[in-house]
Length: 251
Image (cartoon, rainbow, N blue to C red):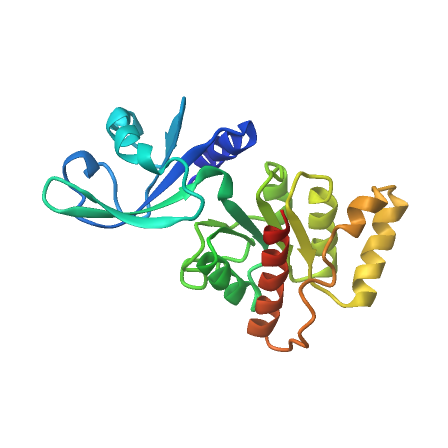
């Protein structure tokens, strides 16, 4: 999913408009559905609409507004089928205001299982890491975006938004510090960083010296995750996911 689409989506979320996100899952993509394919998305509000497909200008938006109209007030995501020209198309429908995005800084051993279980819990996953041998679709098949670039380069164009869950699991102390420093003042829903208590204290002390808001620092989940005596990468990922779900359900 391209950056331009995500910017449009975040703008819609920020505007507070009620709307519907339709993700095309499978089926017969013919007739009115012929422009779409698996995993394509169409977002519809009362006065606006966006899509991630390249030829979106050809979409018969009035047709889709009419067939999705009955779903505009759903509280929980649902899976439904719609008639196409030669069969049916399976579509996953969810409320616009319920999209959460996992911004995963680091593509190491903890990041891989975390991306998988985050996708299972309806998070849109984006992985940021400049190592192509780590950050790729083979290692992260459930991620919607693979930003194979330096953290600094990505952060130059990234502004945390409501609905963003930021997890910092990079490969080094300096990278952790740079990412944390860049995003901490943003409008995220959750921010967590991996590391020992000693490492976290050192990073926080550095940020305090730069006069960052102490209340903001206290909101950072670090050391990250719910305490479950986790040891393996998969167990650590479960503890992080538990912390993210706890935050999501407290909103």
